[in-house]
Image 1 (cartoon, rainbow, N blue to C red):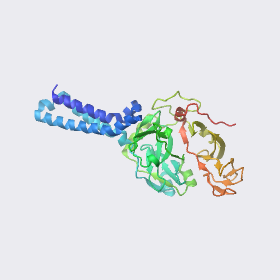
Image 2: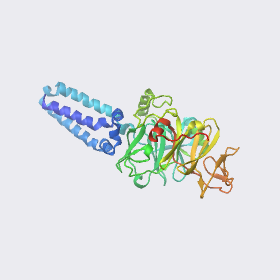
Image 3: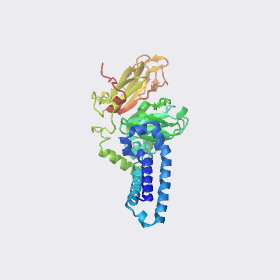
Image 4: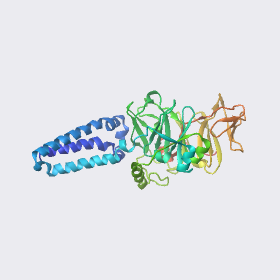
Length: 406
């Protein structure tokens, strides 16, 4: 073969090394590389320079081939290399995670009335309570592809993350070392999203709520899933995030729909599990996953499905909590039952409010004391995984106890 043939082949190999490791299908096969901080650093940083080197070599090779004449640029190896070079570029354009899952950095919001008119009351939202107790909501369907939405406003900025494979959401406060994150979605580990913060050069698994090397714990914020109608009734002054649909949304979601990934009744699992499948509950049944310290507890969504109102008083790792639900489990929130140094026992009144048996104070289901000795006090929401798929929660928390009637 001619020298220009070898040079053309080398440029294709360099381009493949730069682009393919960060594309969606390859990440499904080599996800552990992207999950590692060294692998993510290469894919979303150093690979750029490999791509530049490939481009420079390709252009120089083309220049030499044109100068040498048709015998060089019409050779079989050269032509095949050109075709492969273009194919890799096209594949990367459609499938590279850096292009596919760009976080939303400048969010747009509607008020609740506008959101209800545009999306309807049945639309699922992810609700977040920020560090100042202010509510925000995100259209879940529209957050499936970017996975990450920045909320930079005010003194309590955060990022909201949503993993479609696990049906899991968690918000992280932008503070301490994580005060100016520059997020790229890298891959998934055991069906849960992993993102890479280029500023701290740390990889973060959503379910771990910290960097992979444990050096950077993240401050989690209370996050819940429910219908837009329920959220609007509970938090009428909330802002509702939305965005316009793009062609990448249609492409990505149709691809997932073909694999039945987002169908709760489907047995499809995209990434290998870390442990054996736990069959104590239906694989994709929704659960409330509460983890405090090293202890966890699972509360199946079915506990709330047949009741308009329900409260469960329990404790995890010695922390007294209450799970409060409304509308057949559409709204489920977890609260810390400790207020001013005393532990409360909550129950529902006939009017759909809560009452604690210790002081007789009345509480709204959003955790504010509306009457009685504790008037004006606020129950602290407990960050947890709200309506996450069981097979992912149990894989990250093997042997987690399942709450049952006692």
